[in-house]
Length: 104
Image (cartoon, rainbow, N blue to C red; front, side):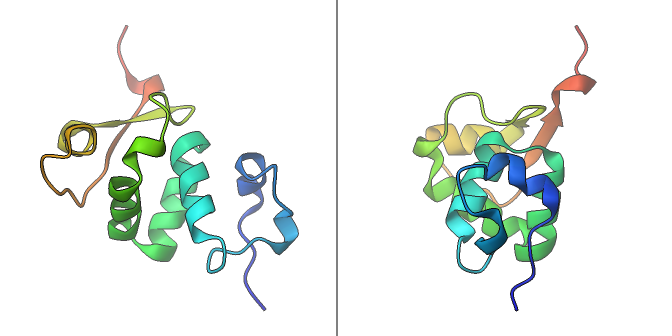
């Protein structure tokens, strides 16, 4: 039996039959939704399960599909953000900054 995703994924996979979705079978849609609409807890879970490199590779290959404002409480910062936007180099690390930690 496939292990279910944690319950907190339900909010970003509202359109799917959550009880039937699996990371193995539905990897791309889960990654997209986690990067587009998720929170840090989604990304931490995915990094633990499939690795940060896999997340970075998916984001690099699909960068043009994401809206300019992805995530509710974080943003992609640093060299990886620039690399994904410009496509000038490969990057295998994500630098996420939480919005709540930003100074006014």
